[in-house]
Length: 206
Ligand code: FES
Image 1 (cartoon, rainbow, N blue to C red):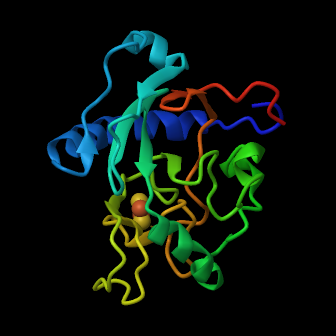
Image 2 (cartoon, rainbow, N blue to C red; image 1 turned 120 degrees about the horizontal axis):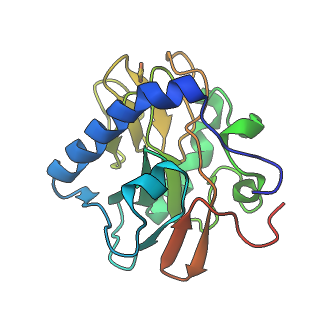
Image 3 (cartoon, rainbow, N blue to C red; image 1 turned 45 degrees about the vertical axis):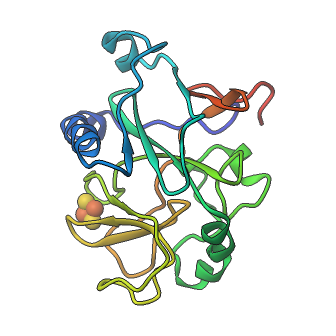
């Protein structure tokens, strides 16, 4: 990333490491929404903690599915969004704390270049650090558009059970919840149509 170094505070990173490990194991055990860790092509655990990039094949990722990777000891979500989910995102802007992602620390600039509401390089593929920006729990994915007990106008998104923070399917935080800022988008790019690399910006990205 050229000008938006996406980093976690050192102390928060340490605190969140155990949470991240738990979250990833939990996601693998959760069944149909989660895709197990991608082990092939990946560097050693030691290298990953040092920040080595992580590569994944997303060919089999279906709409509504969340692939969970690990990068720098954090869970990284790669989520495929449906057209209905993408179409619903603008309708949420009035209910969000930072709908235009003005906090530059929370995403690389290049994910805002297309449709800023998507916060992604490809519209349908969202890449997020899977840690709540309140205290670092791992939010649940609820990708369906349907009324939920915690939000009758739910358009799909992430719900953090720890203190009930909510984020939309781009990781944008709702107003009136404890989480103060949007979920983090890590640096990433596509090696080809179905191969994503976490931890490295696209060539020439500004
Ligand atoms: S950690 Fe997510 S709401 Fe508190």
